[in-house]
Structure formats: structure tokens, C-alpha cells
Amino acid sequence: MIELGVNVDHVATVRQARRTYEPDPVWAAVEAHLGGADGITVHLREDRRHIQDEDVRRLRELTHIKLNLEMAGTDEMVGIACRIKPEMAMLVPEGRHEITTEGGLDVVSQEKPLEKAVGRLRDAGIIVSVFIDAELEQVEAAKRIGASVCEIHTGPYAHAFHSKGRDAESPAVVLELDKIHKAGEAIRSHGMRFNAGHALNYFNVQPVAALPGVRELHIGHAIVSRAVFVGMREAVREMKTLMVQAARP
Image 1: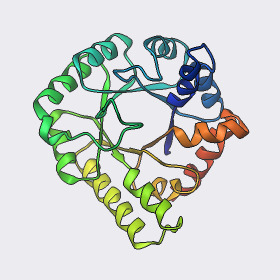
Image 2 (image 1 turned 180 degrees about the vertical axis):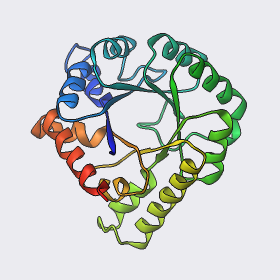
Image 3 (image 1 turned 90 degrees about the vertical axis):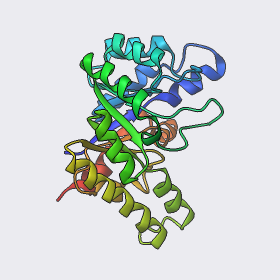
């Protein structure tokens, strides 16, 4: 069955705006779990703009579903992951001036350092994922460096969906969805797990959830935004229901 990983970064964004202690992303993770989430995702950025080291430690200790740590492939972050031991570490590109992750990791141009990072993480017993664009050369490179999971960047699809009147049959939307589909087939043919995420919301999620073999979707901003009005538990429940409905044979 398709799974939902809920990203709680932006709960911490609200907290850090006031440099205070609430809202607590750990509390949000518990509420997400109660709403049906299968995992929790957080991105420990190098500039610590939202999630803090203590958040990751407490999430590891207090949550009872799997933890996915998004991170740059730096020595510092790999060291933190090896100490914390999340179930999965996802290597992502990171820019200090970006608002959110703006594209997939260029594995092709960074194979050697990424292979080293993947090796350290795997030796620590951590499943390693890479966040990549829907490009076959990136899938091939991910396999070469030893990744077990590829998460396909769904941002271009989501942006096409939004700009084309939320029409899932628009040629631009169909084109982007087909790229994700083909990348997913390549991922699975290499024995890796096919995940997807970025900019997915309650209106565009179902075509992605319906793709063959997609294992997990990681969604944050849309769920946290909806939770402002209906609560985290209900927001997660609604998203998971949409995903499961779309994924049914």
C-alpha cells in the first residue's frame, strides 16, 4: 500500500519566526501519526532555519513511525545522521538563499563525494535515498553510488498543474507526469524504491499516487497549511485518503 511521509519543517518555521518553543514539531509529528502518517520527514538545513538539532533528537526518541532525515551530503550532516540513525536519510541539494528545495540533486556531477556519503550512511544501517529530477541519467547515477531509494522531484509537474488551470489532462501536465512515470519505471528496474514528492497538494496528488509502483509520497507544506484550518490530524487523514483511493488497482 502507498505510504505518506509528512514533512513537519514548517511547523518549526512558525516557531522560529518568534524564536520561541511553540508550535512543537514533535507534537505535530504525533498528531500526523494519529492521522495516518506512515513516516515523518524533516530537513535539517545547514543554516538551521527551521528544524533544529534538538528537534531531530527528540523525533528520533519520541515518534513511533519511521523518520526520514533530509540533508545535504556534507560531512557534518552525515555525522549527525550516523549518530541519530533515522530509518532513512535523503540526500538533497541545498542553497542558502532558496526558500525551499528548488530542484533535484545532480548526482551525475557529484558521484564520488556522494558515493562516500552513501557508504557511510549505509554502514550505519541507514537506508539512503536521493532526491532527483525525473531524468534517466540521474537514476543511473543514483544506482551507481549505492542509493536504495530515489525520490522523484514532482515540482515541475505540480507547477504545470497549477498554471494550466488544475487540468490533469492538459498536455503540459501529462508530459510532466509521463516523465515521473518513466523515471519510476527505471528506478524499479534497478531494484530501487520509487518515492516522489515536492509541491504535492490535495488537488494534484492523485495522478502521482496512481503511478505504478510508487511507494511513498512525502508532503509537507500543503498539509501544514490545511492543518491551520482543520488540525494536523484531519489534514493528514484527508491526504492519506486521497492517496489510497488513487492507488487502488
